[in-house]
Amino acid sequence: MSALTIDRIAGALGAELHGLDLTRELTTGEVDALYAAVVQHKVVFLRDQPYDIAHLERLTVQLGGHGHTPFLESIPEHPGVVKVVREADEGGFNFGGKWHSDWSFQPAPPALTLLWSVEVPPTGGDTMWSNQELAFDTLSDGLRTTLAELDVVHSAGWAYSADGILARTAKGRSMRINTSDDALAEQVHPCVPTHPDSGRQTLFVNPTYSVRFAGWSQADSAPLLQHLYEHSTRDAFTCRFRWTANTLAIWDNRSTQHNALDDYRGHRRELHRTTVSGLPPTR
Ligand code: SIN
Image 1 (tube, helix red, strand yellow):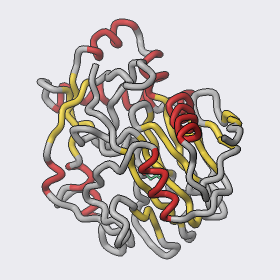
Image 2 (cartoon, protein in one colour):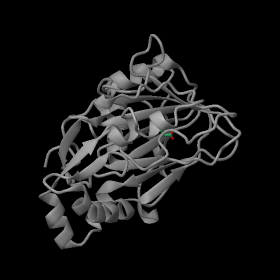
Image 3 (cartoon, helix red, strand yellow):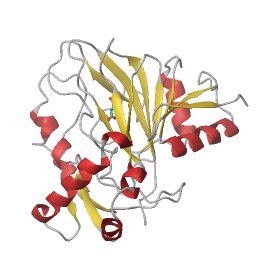
Image 4 (cartoon, protein in one colour):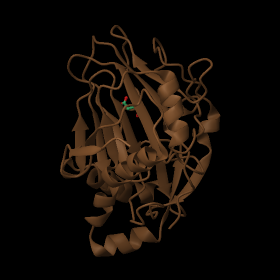
């Protein structure tokens, strides 16, 4: 087994990993060490890994198997592998450009996401992540006690429904997205699940897919949810990653949110993404 070295990139979360060669199949020990690093650092980056779709698929399977990918068309012959792309001459906003954790509206949201860069802009197009364990830990005792007993309703409606934001801005988009009113289905999760691997409590709300607290109206929920969205993405809880081509990022969706920055108009950006299946969040 090759030696894995870890360089943290920020105080709150994120680390660059060195010592793994993804062109060959990782040993069980290497996969376990990689998974443990993702859980500990919440997002890890492996630079200078020549992109190969077969290697992305192999690693996804080794880390736990593909999650279900709704709404986004997969690359033909490669189910579950999605091309996240915006062309240099394309208008509209970028994919993933609002804080979220991936597919939090699913009964069992993905444990991990893998995102491998193929082509990135010379400047701009960074991605940010935020540590949701730290976000929860830094709330006041009273609010933590209250939130720990609440459930949150999640839905993909705002983004993916037939009149959602992605349908309304579809003109000229090169990403293949199938919007549908299936997106209006609702899913309830604890506001503060316990991470199945770390055993730590984590705040599990995000402004893209969280709709309201279960049993509360949207109007009653909005002020507290807005407070949590602002608190959970405070600068001090985040890291920001500058991509180079052939870099693989792997993040833990159970303990992070992420946000793709839209500051690279006039340049092409292409990354390939898979998710690793997860468990239903529980207290
Ligand atoms: C995503 O939200 O999955 C995309 C992130 C990115 O393009 O940086």
